[in-house]
Image (cartoon, rainbow, N blue to C red):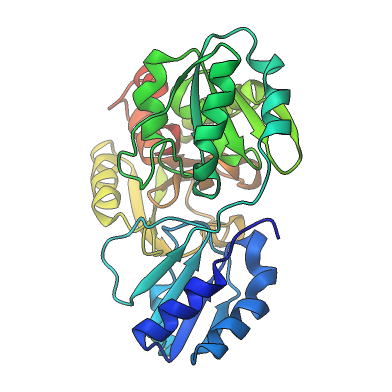
Length: 332
């Protein structure tokens, strides 16, 4: 198995807490393991229900679903704790990866050849591999920096909407190496730091730079801001997911939009999709105060601009485009 699902710990948590009904929440790549985890939970004395809905991160905690189902414990796989206030007790299983780092990191070295100082970042699944990767880079003659944990649990850790530790060392490094799978987090690093970013993909066992993709997104964001300037009526999106509910920011941007002579409608929703937004044909553009990565990564799917909070400030000339780029606030 590629990931450590800590079945023994799962059984101990259920028994030790006396949980009788649990809700198991899994990211997309781990949902296939649901039936096996149910068997572990049942052996420990609990009725286990697997959430089949998408799970996008620790911000997407299924608290309301657990309450509706009468569950007295949530077991959340694949992320570290992000939300402090929990109405339902929650156990976070980080699902550490069981993979070798050497092949992919070796292949990353030619991509990093131009730079001597490297910032090292990863996700929680690979945080236990950072020391090994850092040692490899040091032996290759690189200077290596790893940012402090900041708001997150581990030094060097990034999540989809929080790249603070990468930003904290950006001035000290020439480029970043993201170690993990896929492009999602590496693109976030590139956007947040404006530094060259290379992926060492431990699953595909290959390495590549994502700078062209980052620049494409930056250009697309400027185009969306310019298009939204012509909007007379905007929808302000309030996320209903537990870690994405930013009512204060939504009210703030609504007020600013109305001061500029535009009309603004507050819209509350759990999933931001083109199909949902198409139900409001009179709205010319949207401001997304929920997950900012929806605006960036799903932009080609939307027929109308969907700006982030800070992009809306640029549109309203409350912030300059240069400041947005400098501070790397695309994904926040």
